[in-house]
Length: 102
Image (tube, rainbow, N blue to C red; front, side, top):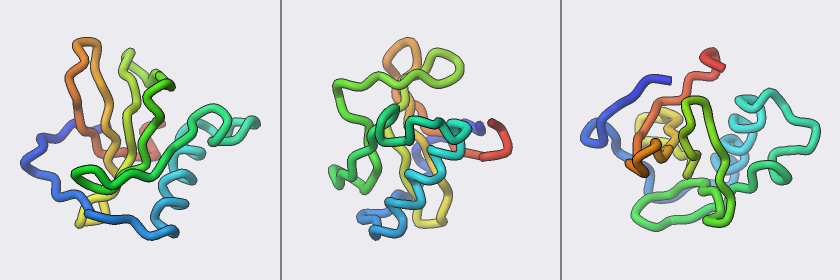
């Protein structure tokens, strides 16, 4: 994943149902299509606080590579797929998701 700075990103204010489903599908594929299904291992909820995103519930801590905690996945106005993760210091990082990386 490529790390970017926040000043380079312009997030969408709302996501269509199709965009929400696409983000779930991307996470399903990124997680190597788990048999349990995406909703069982990583439930994502649509929220529109500050910007639109598919967010992990506060009671779920899904760890990614590098001991980061996944917080949400979203789309920018330029149609880039962005994930927000918390690093070991609980600092929010934004990454462009590249499916070929996983």
